[in-house]
Image 1 (cartoon, rainbow, N blue to C red):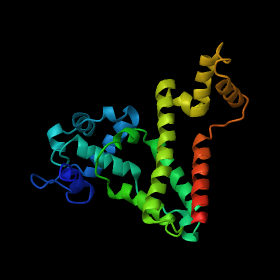
Image 2 (image 1 turned 120 degrees about the vertical axis):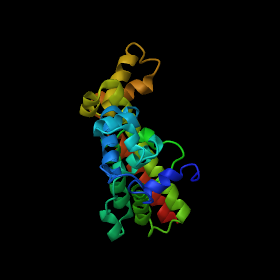
Image 3 (image 1 turned 120 degrees about the horizontal axis):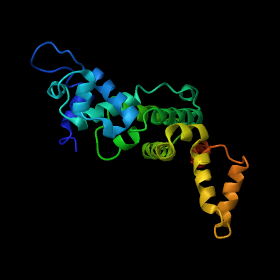
Image 4 (image 1 turned 90 degrees about the vertical axis):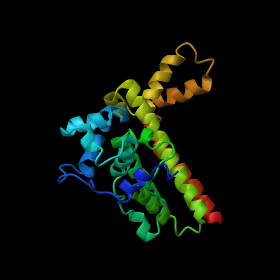
Length: 245
């Protein structure tokens, strides 16, 4: 895989910071990457192209190629820059692995909320950059004193990150279908419940369990806590597994 993505490896891990020939550079990888991220934040990943980024910077498309070989390498840079430097986790220093992992998940959810295009950009085989790898390092470090094996630690991180991603994906899809402002104001569960309510009109006898659950949500039983609820149950399971071990 890395042989096919050598350009991404070189750019992400410091092999190429400026063009190797020509006059003194007027651009930088950071400026190009930040401009591309700005386009994606507004219009999604489909709004990003070498031509569009060049236009935003008031440079020619060919000028960009002196810094970035193509869009796939640019997207790799965008992902790592959008993830950002992973923060220290408060619980890690005190051995509170559960609190540390909860904080990690909340911070990851916030990144997806700021940059929903990441959900698309991070799919498929690709090279991870130092920031993204650093996020995994932080989560594994939080679990280092639990007695879990290395494989179990990695599995735990995959499960937690998968849950965060799934909730972010639901929220992003709701924002697209209902409008960003509406979905954020009501929350994904409330939006989904409203849609189900419409579908269940005249059909509650056919779907009694679903009708009862939606009625509870409408009555205030739920407050858009799917992300928190799922995370706590995952952490409960991990805690039980750690104690049993």
